[in-house]
Length: 262
Image 1 (cartoon, rainbow, N blue to C red):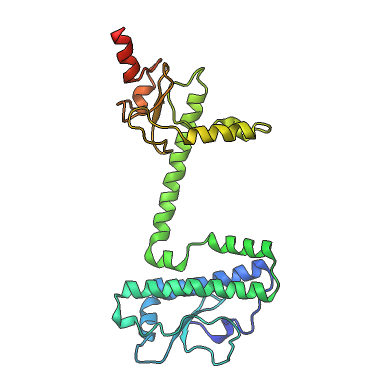
Image 2 (cartoon, helix red, strand yellow; image 1 turned 180 degrees about the vertical axis):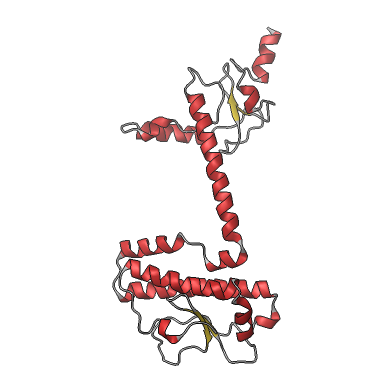
């Protein structure tokens, strides 16, 4: 097993938010090593179902240890979940490692907030500590491989939002926008117009497509008729964003039919 008693929590008492966070990161990194790196085979071997209740410990020095629970009652620190070895042979290895990872995440939070309570962290300190820990992927996310996927998706969403923002800015510079998504106006960021903007937001939240009757959704392209001023899904009236760029005055199918009959 990796790690030693010197890195444990008994003689190590972080007293500030930064110290507790460093303690959290060290323990977390040690447990991630046990569950994801070359150490995983050694961790698997040590968790023999024939042995007594075993726990996975992470130490502040980034080492890990598989051992029996502390004999002291109550213990110096919150204890990890007992008996991780008993389920080893009854599950797929990946599922078993993920289960241990979930319990490890819960233990890390328990230890961090134990220190916070012991040394009198106030509401602001507890919130800051949680936010610092929450900025890191959980052990489960690392073990399951979802941390990298989430990072890629976040990057993709950020890029799409940036592109939409640039597109909307371009449309907003026109004398009279002919098409867009019924989004809140930029004036909501200015002082003195908050009330008016709240009313605008309420109205936009109730915007419905003049063709299908469905409500506005932020991830869909919409276009406004210059005659009746109703909004439509681009897909409902067969208008794409690229085609809309070249339309000077858009008339919806209903208004077009009215003009044709007259």
